[in-house]
Image (spheres, rainbow, N blue to C red):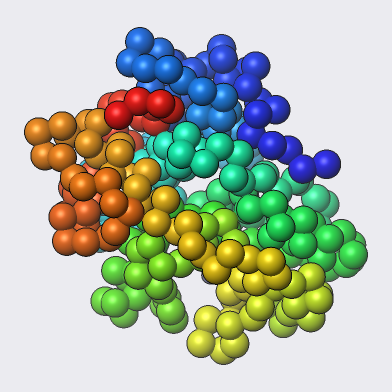
Length: 266
Ligand SMILES: [Zn+2]
């Protein structure tokens, strides 16, 4: 069974307002709706699994660009953006369940929109003897910015990366897998499109898709977070990745802002 965000609400109620990965707002600051804390709890669980998590990077996103090639470096900020987005569009994403023949890279947020989620689960379950390794799934504008900048600078071996706000990873409708030739046919049968050799790891869900019309919500979520933490330098909350938003993102703390997502707040 797919696990909606709200399943974790009771646990979230205990942890919202604590310093779980710095992604929740203080309970004093505004109303906190279901979903916001559940994201933090779930991601905290993920990061406790397996080996210990490295300490968060204390620099800005611009500084993170110069540190390695993993989008994990902006994980804290990304958790806040996703939680904020969940305030704007509650329960948009569904967690991909643990399956014995699927593994995730350590920078992966294993969430997709419902249609893509159901199609992926069906494809993986129908091939129990094949292992799927997922290297990217749901992405935030902060992650997409790193990938785009690395691609533009011919760093990190990135063959293709969309502009921030233009990727269907940001709308929860795409995934990148290792050894795509093993999965191409099965994913296509379930409604995914393969982009071909120019981005051979990438599959995007197109059956019944709204064409990525809500990718801007990811940027809007960041703009709201920024304005909450830097009220003296307010950004237009328009969902556009213009020069002012790019400057704000470069200046954002990779580990997350002091005040995270707030549902129903400013
Ligand atoms: Zn991709």
